[in-house]
Image (tube, rainbow, N blue to C red):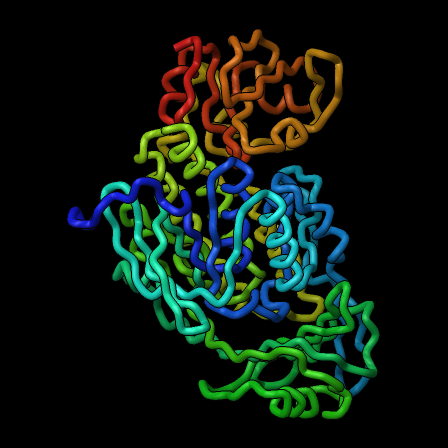
Length: 501
């Protein structure tokens, strides 16, 4: 609870202090900075973390990154997933696809999976944050925090031994599985032991393998060993499940794994640039918010690395939270708007825990068409919706239960606007604003903070039907209505005002 004895500063040093410089924290900081929210990121390590780690960017994540202005850089830094190449007894056994695209997935112009080393994703987000006016400080570790009614005070220790207090209107813990923010709040993580095998991940350089395939040796009893070429580098990411709970990841033990479980000799690994041992966990924070402090990414939910869900769901946490903090801080929306963050994102995280566990346990199996098709159905995050949210209001008299509803991700379909231009919907949505789409009806008068487009033709009109559709900055439909009367009441909840109210 807030401490009423703390004195209110005349002006907090920043609006939002983000603890953790991983993809979740940097995505959130970029989103806030482009809204004019004074944002500072602290990262405990002396530099942004090395290692390819979460290398798979899903379609919905790429849509978010396109919205933030980093899609082109990520596309240039990455590549599509290469085909899998199975090896047995030193012989190639044929290639196959890990993921079969789902023909029934919601339409997206983004590829279902894009391969980018995590360190490169972080570098691109860092550069964008600085370009937008946000700030990042490495070698700065949160040691404690305290809340007042109007602000948060954080004690920050520097790597050089110094320390200082920082004040912020809000603080977000995006500091990973061992979150200092979560521990300071005393928020428990509820999880279970699902019997998942430990694993080693490493970035290595290897001679004797082509870089056109993701190589897999599937038959060792502890589980498969994989070597995936990392775009824009000379490296491969190694993944290997192991038996037992104890393992020390070193260049020597990584080379021994390669020699023992592939046809390659140990000295084929010419360099081990980074390595880590991990025990997969599944856990969910009891709550994502306490007063002016919120949790996101691995600080709020832990996933085994099956299907690359962890990084991607963390980015979506940030995309959901960023616009809400922006509305509260910059537009004076009621603070209760932030309660919708946990209400919307915690159920999504709970569902992904089960999905990640299933994918991790299944592993990668050569020519397993069912698994490849299943991965194609679930590894895009395009179907996530908030239909049960208090922020999702469908006031249309006529709507199809099987059609698009309030709370759904808006469909990125082509449309013709009143000026005769033909564009895709997400081209109209790009940016930190709300967007009102008037489909085959007259739009209401302009409202500050909302871009309005009258749509008269195209696939989008057939998908949505006639009506007014207010689309949130995270691309989800907040309100679907037949007339403007509902609009004013909705806008007041998110810190906007309509002349129709």
